[in-house]
Length: 86
Image (cartoon, rainbow, N blue to C red; front, side, top):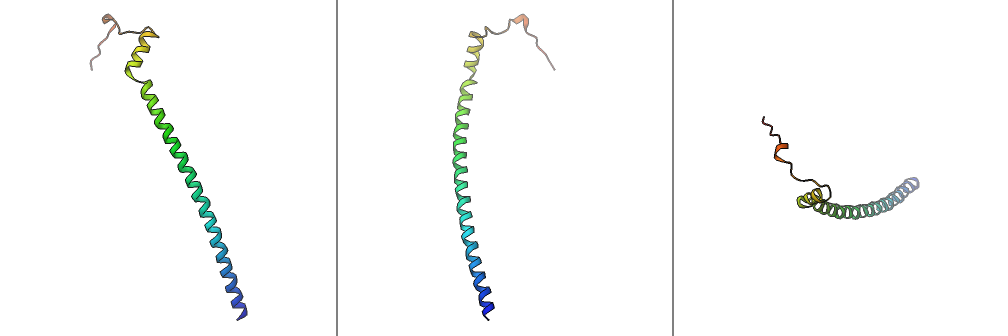
């Protein structure tokens, strides 16, 4: 009978230690999730800023202005046009 009680006490203590370990692991993983979510929010903000900047840089008027002023480009002369039919 004493051996059975000793085994049961060991099982209860072992279970309690396992619960403590699992709670600590859960807290650690919850903290990692929070850090990851913060990183995702920062990246989403950066992505939104980059999309806005891309929209600004690829605006048709800006491209036309740079082509004309900085690169000296303009529409082609009519004699340089070739029309291709399918």
